[in-house]
Image (cartoon, rainbow, N blue to C red; front, side, top):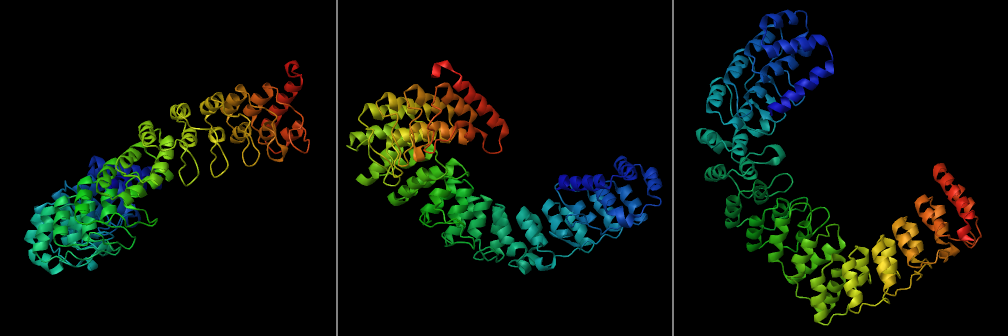
Length: 543
């Protein structure tokens, strides 16, 4: 918090941009009281005193504080975060009681309320018994949180684990034990979400209600999971708290444990009846899908141990279709799934994309066809291997009986998939294995045209090297060169023109290549393409 205050002070001063302010600030920091008195003469502290006062408090310059008060600086002026100087002085683990005394003796309000509680609420965070005693001896009182900006000393001490204060103020604890503060939370919730087990136990003994929810519908169990103390989690489950309670945002205890990447709590929740089939969050994701997210691998590894076959299969569906295509997740799911024949086909196909040779061999030994499709996109293991640059898998499949014939739901075979995916080495391998290099897709485009449309120079070059026909027409009679010129792909066009791609009949309308090259607003690319076309026309090797 002191760092935040300092940043606020420096920002405020720098924003003024006045050398007089810099001199005053330096005098406060140096504790040069005579110079400070001189510099403050004629300064309107009603406007700027708050900045100087907060800086004097931060650097614990008691004499500077006295001078500022003497010169008219307000003791109750707040900073950009709504804090008075006394609030700054009492907060933190290294509170300077002498600074607090100066402010209080000068008349600072010990019961001032800010945006995040009153003075005493902030003081209880530090755990300083002497500070709290001093404030209460000078009039600070414990009030309900609704009277103190949503945070009273009981709640603050509970979140900070200041058990000594709570024990001394036990009558006030009982008085305000279930009062609601910020976000409609209670003292017990503060203790649970900060993982303060001893404080949690004490509050329960004083009558705290463990079956309340906050304004977002979060249960105490969910907050305890955020706090990470498994003893609190275990105690709440033993009390019978609903492990599958959903908050207003459709989160529950299991989703919170996954987000916290806490395998021990996940294990406990699953043993106590957490339902892994309940979708959570704004996108209604299953827990196994949540566990594939950016929260960490430990949550996923624990959760899969407790899932039934249908839930494991839902995980496999997610890992093959979602954004979190981690091989680790695939391996953990596949080894636990007891697949039906239809599911074995799906696994065979998907294994190609994950480069999982062991699973492919295992399924082949069980009689699963290497050309089995995934039942969703119509792709085979070979197609998925080409899409993911898994060329060693592709080589194994070709050597062990995978065929060239299958096409997916879009009408593409493995070579078309490789070309469209930018897998130059895979495309070369397939052609050398015997696949027709000029095969057409449903739109009449060849692998070469697909590679040109993608703008993949390396794949274009690889296909030409293994015999692709440069002027083979595709949709609307457009050749590969047509697409390269129309899309202003200079590097791709260079490869085609250096391979002597024909300049005539590049589409069904007999469009001239220079016309295509000149079109549009990309003048530099157009000029480069025109030069390449002229070089092609002048190349004797191409005649």
